[in-house]
Length: 301
Image (tube, rainbow, N blue to C red; front, side):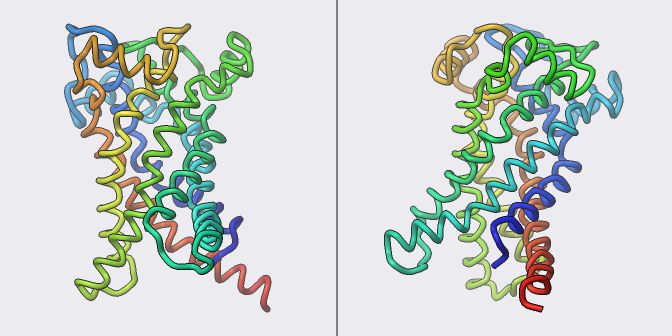
């Protein structure tokens, strides 16, 4: 087992590799979630995952599709560094306190995943805020409130100057709920699937097993996390006080657009989260092995 710092670095590195590949789908997902916000009848500019990618590329180029990538790197480093770095220490500590040994417990695993995810979401929230606003902005086909920032640094400056330090943490509660939901099932589902696949198929530990387990985990994460993700995107992108809180946003969205509105952009999210989870967890497994070998040389040689 690598150290907490080693796991943090491995998790952050793995997530940055994953987000490079999947960021375009995240842009489409964000715009689908904001499209028709609090409006029952709105012309749909974006109608699906690949149509959205095509429309953005045609009108804004690759730069538009990859808007906010720098902020996404910072967020992923904070989020997944905490999520993958603190999961095992939290799990081990709680298990030892409750059972006085290191057995596997589903409830403790879920608690540990949620706790490490909430911590990461709180730390990385300002980066996700700026990323969301950069992704939602379009000079050609705008949806939702438009925030014109030159880049992430300009976004931070403008938010701080107009809304103060508090403004940088707008929507942090929704982010913590969203990530808590996702993290509570991501690692427990991954390790559960990994053990079951290993036991019932005879597949040995390796890249193939990591890919299959990650795919199962990614699907479950998307199903659980998407409704609070939609709420978070809208709260991050709002100007002024359109929503007073998480439940107000949820209530207004459902009342105006119907209950299925909270699943807007689901397939774009799935298109992002599946490869993202697969790449993050698979790269994390490989990176952790590399980190452990380096730590072994440093501390034991």
